[in-house]
Length: 488
Image 1 (cartoon, one colour):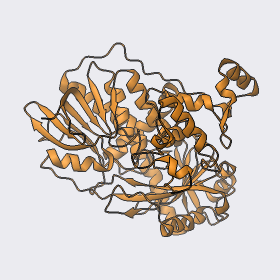
Image 2: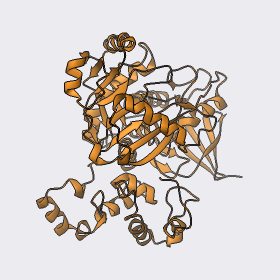
Image 3: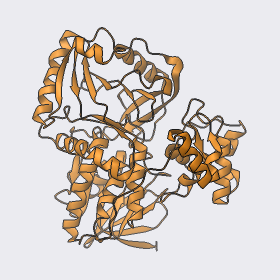
Image 4: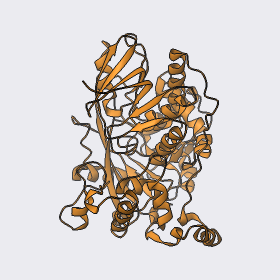
C-alpha cells in the first residue's frame, strides 16, 4: 500500500499560477504543499513566454481574461517592489501597417476603455514614428497603452515560490500527479513516485495538463488546444532598438509577432502560433523561426539576425472556448481550477491567485496567518553595482570578486546564493535562470564548466551527477563534447 500524506491544500503545478496561489494561501493557517512534475519552478509556459504585462485592452469585455488582466496589471508594480522581481513600465503599442488595420486598432482603444484601462489612446503616424524611430515607415498609426510593461517571468515565479516557502509552504519537484479522485470529504492525488496525497482542497494549476486533471473530476468536460510559440532572443546591444513593446494588429491566432525590450536589456522577437498535439514538444522548427523573423521585419525592416544569441519555444495551455477556467466546477467541490491559462495569464496571475486563495480559504473556513511576511529582497547583482558597491561587496564576501560569467558579469557569490536559496538551484539551468550565468552572448560557453564545478562542490556530488536541467540531461557528456543538449 502506498504511503499517504495529508494536507489542507495541494497545489498542482509550480508555474506562475500555482506559485502565486501558494503564496496567497500562506496568508492563512493551512498546511499547504505544491507538487510539480518538472525539475524546478516555471518549467512550462510560465518560463517560455514573452514576459509582457498586458494592459488589458485586448480581452473580450466581460470575460475572466478581461477582469483578471486589468486587475493583475494594476497589482504588478507594488508586487515587484514587495517581492524583488524585475518589472519595467515601458508601455506597449499595437501598430496598424495598412489602412485596413486602422479601424481594428481603434476598436481596441475603445475596448480598452470598456475594460477599465484608462491610459489607452490612438497615436497618429507622425507622433508614432517620432516615439519609435526604428519602426517601419509603413506604419499608419498605433494604440498606445502606457500602463503596459515587461517582467522577468522566471524571476517573478521564483519570487512567489520563495516567499511561499519562507511562509511555510512545501514544494515537491520531479513528481507528477497521475490521478485525482474523490474519497469522502477529501481528494486523493496519486503521484508518479507511488505515494499519494490526501487533501481537503486542490488547486489545479497544472498548465498544459490542467484541463486533463479537470476532466478527471468533472462531467463538465473541457477541450485543450495546445499552441506552440517560438521566439528569438537578441543580444543586449539591440535592447534599446524599441522603447515600447511593439505588437502587430492581432488576428484569430493571437496578438501576432512582437518586438520588445526585456527587463535584462535584450530584445525578444516572437511568437508564432502553431497548434500541436504534444504539449511537451517545445523544440523550435527552422520554418517556424523563419516565419517569426519574416513577420518581425514588418515591424522592424532593419532586423539584424547576426545579433541573435538563442531561440526557444513554449506551449500555451489554450482552451477551446477562449476564456480562463477559474474556480470550482459545480460537481467537484473543493477542486479549484486555474485552467486554459493562456495569455494574458502571466499578467493575470496575481489577481487570479488572490481570488482563488480567498475561495479556498472560505471553503475551508481558514483563519488568517498573523505571522505571514510578504516581503522578499531582490538578490544583488554584481553587474549593476557601482565601483564603490563592488569594492564593499568583495570586502564583505570575497566570492563577489570571482567572476564566473564574463558576458553577464555574474560572480561566484551570486551563483552560491542561487544554489542555497529557499528553493535551491540544483541544476545548471536553475542557476542560469536565477542569476543569468550563461544567459549572455556566448550562452554558457565559458561559464558552464565553472558553474558545474561549483554545483559539485556545494551539493557534494560528482560531475557525472550534475544535470543541465531535468533527469537525462547529465552535463558531463556535454562538457566533453560527446553530445549536444538542447539549450535550457
